[in-house]
Image 1 (cartoon, helix red, strand yellow):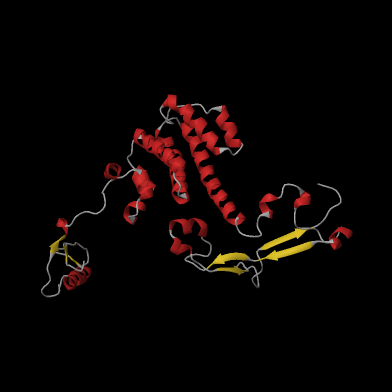
Image 2: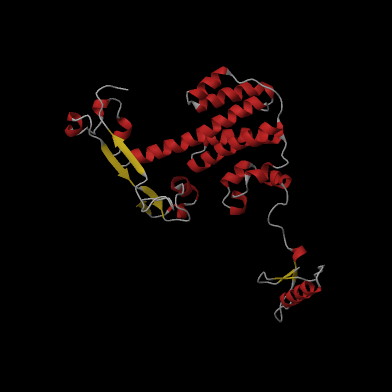
Length: 294
């Protein structure tokens, strides 16, 4: 194959076999037409061109760490899939990368990079280290209690301390516990940021500062209190953004690719084709005041 300066590809020599002579002839004609190069074209042999991307995961390991992939501004490096990177990687190498990622995500000030590191850690322990390391192990009870209490940072610390004497998290039990904790911490980190963004908007503080019923700014209308059979019904449309898909994670997308997060949000009713005659609000809620708690 030869490439011209404008990156147009032309086959130098083509050999094909086909059972039918007619198909053979048409195929030959097709390649003859493609091989007609413009006059005065400088031809460059493709084998002499530099290779821009590594051809194996082993080369990736030598050239880039997972932190390099997260921090890189080069799309070819930044968009390397974790599956490609972890293919053929040894357990020791992955555990070393996990230790570096855990240190990185604790000190990183960039929310997107922190969340990406957390989900890298989750995926490695869930799909790669766990399947490679077959050593049995125990889960510390304190870490298990912290996990149930949604204290994921403490749970991770307990699991990592327990793994120090057993290969740095190389047991299936510890890797399974770590994957769960990292996964939950990733979503908790995102939720905390969303909560902070919503709370900072004027008029939204009450949603987070209410601790007692009497502090709630909303009140039940008197007409609903006098008649226990009255029901308040509210039908609400759903948000849809005019982007590449109907509903995208604008918050997370905006951190990674701000241009992609600039969308128009509209409120729409929905309908199931063949079931509903017209679109209706998809959120349908009912409120009734009862005289005794359930």
